[in-house]
Length: 393
Ligand SMILES: Cc1cc2nc3c(=O)[nH]c(=O)nc-3n(C[C@H](O)[C@H](O)[C@H](O)COP(=O)(O)OP(=O)(O)OC[C@H]3O[C@@H](n4cnc5c(N)ncnc54)[C@H](O)[C@@H]3O)c2cc1C
Image (cartoon, rainbow, N blue to C red; front, side, top):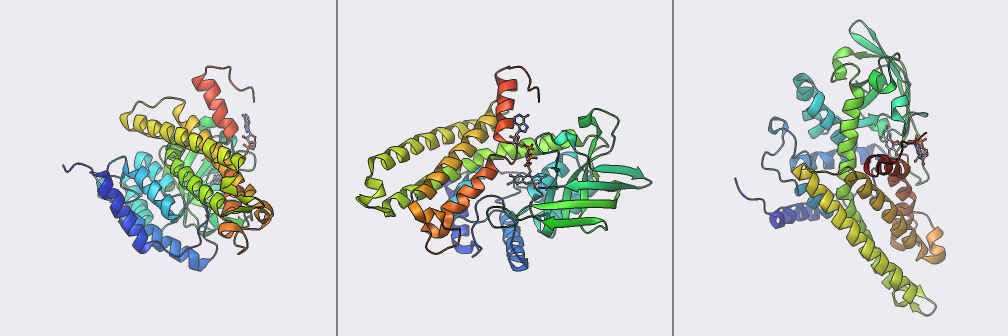
């Protein structure tokens, strides 16, 4: 087997992005297309990224995975996408494919995995509810068996891109009479079924990435269940674990943002010269550089341990917390460095870098919540790594 050559893989990703990155408006984080035209562009671009093997390389070979795939590829891909500020695949296809590959039937894999790769199906994640976010197991959406279908009733919220999704990775309660984690099942939900209503929400970023999704007597074929009945909690925990572990790759964004921040400081004029000549600005930038270096090394160690199967209980929460907090601090400084212009909105031509820092800051809060909030990560650290008494809720 040919040895993995990181430099040549990086060159291939970079050349592809330089030649093909679409002219789509860059928005930080996991966002949704704003209109039909953007939706079509995002789908075509996401399809190309899977076809290139930049995503889905770790899938089984029969579904398009690369048996010679190397685990460093994920980090290199993230690094190059951050460098280019190129959009990453839209939707929750990666989360859903993880569940299907590990728990789905061969028939489900045959139907859904090719459609995820080709972007015929865009997926959304239908987990959170108005009273079940951090405490996800308290979900109230029900799926009641009726012959060869399950009848689904209830409501989800914060469902990114649900409005434009073809499929939903749904969790619903199938047994209300057992402890809450033991009565949940997972489904591959066709979003075009009668009884599903999706309402977009507008966020403080100015875009509509989230949705509310309402279910009224939605008849879902029993064959759409992923895994066994009442095994949804284990399936979801596995998917979320993989999603959180992927946060290590996000750390590359910090270095890119720090470089952009230094560039902004060089360009920002103060009454007595450039911001980058100001000792307090220089001290702050140097302190950020130290934190970025620490976060990068920690996340590399986390990824290496994951590859070797020697992960530690504190790896993921520490990586996620350090990324989310530092990402916020850098974005906030980017806004502050602009002085009064920092109050202008994303997209306004007078704002530095067209309001990149404003968008970064408004979205930075999302990283402290999604995939497990900072407080939940701290609880995980306290209870599982430090052996502190369990959270009394
Ligand atoms: C960008 C983004 C994208 C998302 N996309 C999706 C999606 O596609 N699909 C989906 O299903 N969900 C999605 N979510 C929802 C996300 O999973 C939830 O927001 C998250 O689980 C937190 O739940 P909540 O918003 O209900 O807050 P809550 O759980 O109500 O928490 C409110 C506050 O209380 C704190 N808190 C809660 N419990 C504890 C505790 N035990 N100890 C200490 N503090 C606590 C939290 O940290 C938080 O500050 C997304 C969220 C974001 C930010």
